[in-house]
Length: 420
Image (cartoon, helix red, strand yellow):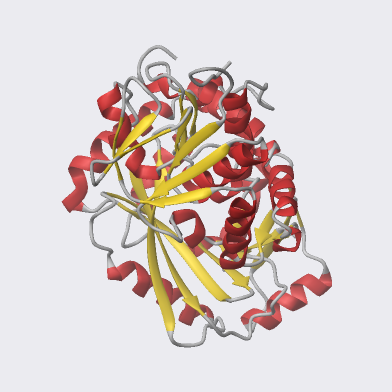
C-alpha cells in the first residue's frame, strides 16, 4: 500500500496541469488528500483542450498496427495528413522504428485488449467527474457522424469501420432526418455518411475546464505555478526551476511530453514523441449549436460545434515539441473548410499542440519501481481527453491502496525497459 512517512498518503503533488494531471488531482482530492498541482502555466490548456472535444470510445484499435504502417507512405504530407518534418528526423525516426515493432500482430492484439478495457471505463468516468463538478450538461453522449465524399471512399470506409473493433459503440445508416440535416449543413447530399452511437462530446472545452478548476479549488486543491527541474530520486519531492523544493507523501507525474526528460535521470525509459495536431476555430458560425461532431474521413478532419464557436482539427505531425508550427497545416485546414463550404466565419484563430505519444499507442499509468511513492500518468496520444477521468480514478486507487477498476499492468512503463 502506498504510504507516506508515517502512514497512508495524506498529501500529493501532481506534476502537470493538463487534463490528465487535473483529473488525477481531482480524484486524489475526492479521496481526501491535500493536493498541489505544479505547472508552469495557469490556466493550463495543453493539447487535450485543443482537440475536437470528441470522447472517442470507438478508437479501440491502437494506431500502432500493421494496417497503419502499410498505409503510411500514401498518407504522408503534403498529399496526406501525416507529417514527418525532415528537420526533426533524429526525433521521429527512432520513434517510428519502435512503432513498427509495436505493430507486430501479437503486440497489437494485446494492446487492443488493454486499450479496449480502459475505454469501457471512459464515458462512465467522464459522467461521474462532470457530475462532481456540477457540469453534467457539458458531457453530451449523442454520437458523431462520418462523411465520405465519393461512393468509392464511402464503400471502403464503411466496410473498414464495420470490420473494426469499435468497443461499446456501433455504426448505422442515417435516418431521413439526419441525412436532410447533413445535406442542409453541407449544401448538398453527401456521397456517403454514417452515424456512430455510443460516443460523446464536450459541449465546450473552456467551460468544462473552468468547472473542473473550480471543483478542484472547492476540494482544497492548490496550484503552484512553476516548472519542475527534477524529481528527487530518494523521496517524494520536486526541485523547481528556482531551486526551491516541494515535498509531499506522493508524486504523480502527468507532464505530457515533458515526462520523458523528468523520468530519464531516474532510470525510466519513456520513448515519448510530440505528436502535434492543428486546429482552426471561428467564434461565430451558422453551424447548428446542438449538432454532433462530423468526421470528414477523406480529409482526415473533424469539425465540432462548441458553445463558444466551431473548430476544425486534424494532422499528425511527429516532431520536437519546441519546433515552430508549420503554417501549411493551418492553410490546408482552411482550404478544406472553404472547399466543403462549411460555415466558418472570419477571423479564424489558429492553434497547435503536442500530444504525448508512446510507440505502442498505449498510455503509461502506474507506480514507479525505482522511486518511492512516484506514480505516473502520461502518453495518452489522441485519447487524453477521452481517458482522463478513467486515468484519474486509476491513479487515485493506486495511491490510496484501493484496487483499480481494471488491470493496469499493460500500461506499466517497464514495458519499455525490458522487464514488464
